[in-house]
Length: 211
Image 1 (cartoon, rainbow, N blue to C red):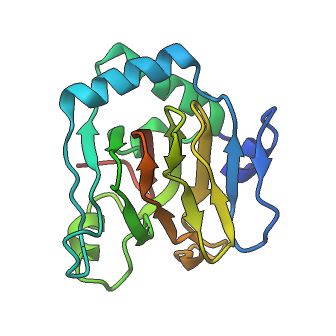
Image 2: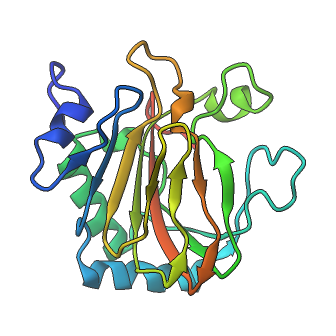
């Protein structure tokens, strides 16, 4: 676990191959080749076997706000345990604060329109999703495959777009240094134009995860 004197961002910045987006507006990092090809393949197979239509807490009345498929990945699966160990070693966050690992599959034409991963304090869903474990802190997302066209992740406020690459890690802090939520982390899982996109997402909470 990270020492109390060290932030997650400081720990990530020390990791070989890690790149931080040069902006004061958010703590946002990427690392290419974080997940090895064999583990990417194993996680893709699990997603294909267990995928279901994705859901969202608040779709803003737009039935096409999130059109991907989702797979909840059981903690006792060997590929999941291997991935979780990699992530814990990297970020140092207490695993007790982590939500269950989730996979997503985007077919051609599917997307997740601009959204934030945190729940807006005072919003209609805040009490429902944050009463037990608090709000989301860090997001860790890994692209599991190359995509023929489209499928990028765009941070409009930060004027930065990340292209899918097999094994590439993208991670960011959903909070400001003050502890409040950071609206600059608004991001768009853009439409896949050709092929299929697979990603794995891990969210951490302020308090231990209680479901």
